[in-house]
Length: 600
Image (cartoon, rainbow, N blue to C red; front, side):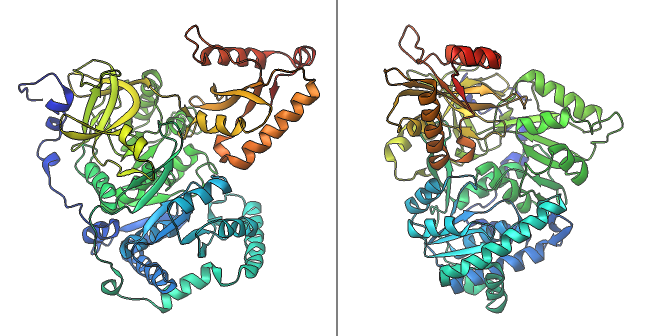
């Protein structure tokens, strides 16, 4: 790499740009909708857009389906400026709908399928959604509750991805459930539309692109995603179509050598930016996307060895399971896998090296490539790319990304190898919806530019490689890479009248190499209680959590004792974690004699 005069500050030197050469300087127009971006680049392309459980769908067929869906939405009354809420998994129809609404100038509110009904209603109302898209396996009572308590006017259902079930029994049960649900939907009248009705409308009322495409409005708020992130409570992150186009360009100009006809395994769900990148970027490059509706329904190693994708973007536990799988034998050939990208959570250098060695020994041209970003900067930041890799690092910034490290107290920029808070500049979010105060804490002006401040501590070395050393904020990262905000769980548990205080700690998930699970450390109000009373309270608290929290936020244990504090009167989570683990190791008899403290 050519040496040049440097200031000593990573964000001023941007030495990572030297790695990309002329390729990194390529100018690509991102100022258009997501639909128009892929259409302009792939309208005449004859490749395969999707491989989906035996189906091969061409790019021409994809664009035809998008126009059908856009026609159906328009006939339904959906218009530019509206917001539509998605409760859908990764599958071609979900992507068609995202692009169809982009074409119409409609905002998309993408909600995690595991979100509680209370949370879904909150996200619908705050985005003023008029329409809801969900599976026809969705319970009628749940839909009635959502429609009665929100701004939703109509619900459009789409076919549940029963083809994702590997078991004939599960597929049969699924078909029975769908048939039953669709029969009960009749009582909801015209407010609910069945899959065949919607698709028939699109086919019958099909309109040309010129009659469907709305006027392009630059930097419009078109995407709403919901994340606990690194901040105190879950937030609605507002983004734009241009930001997603920007992400696609970064990988096109990267050193990853992504090519037309490469197969991309889309295992991350569409309600996170990492998941949106997992279909919009490969489609823009002419790749073939392999969507997985239920990533927990099949072993990751089976997906890799059966589908043979060329490019995979997952979380650490995906690759750990592959590395430890009994399907990996000395004769296993992984030469088809040119990129194994790892994000969502940190992975230590020892495990990275171990996995990389396995991949290379089995024919993969390169090892594991950890990367880094956060929702407030969409899904693109840094990445280890091919031979440009360092153990323990999350790689170099992608071509048009800037990285700065600032002092935790003064917020002043730091030099190479100085540890502070990581900040990124790239596809920044517009705001946290309805929360200007929290937005101003994350999007800040430093040195005349706007930056997104992360909740992560790290440094940049003299060669431009970024290292993450820990988290500034207290966030639990589950084994699937999803972030859990302890404050959200604590606030719900403290609703119980007998709770004095609650601290949620992360406990190692014994079934996975990486990832923690939430445990509620609960201190009750001071008064004598029998074991039976405590058990009753535990049951009531668990019921509150089940009602008010998403499934992946549910504590795996409830420990009753006194909150432990440090000498500085801060919560001593380390001591509480040790106490919990010690209690877990006691025999069932000892627990009974001492009084049961852990409830599950």
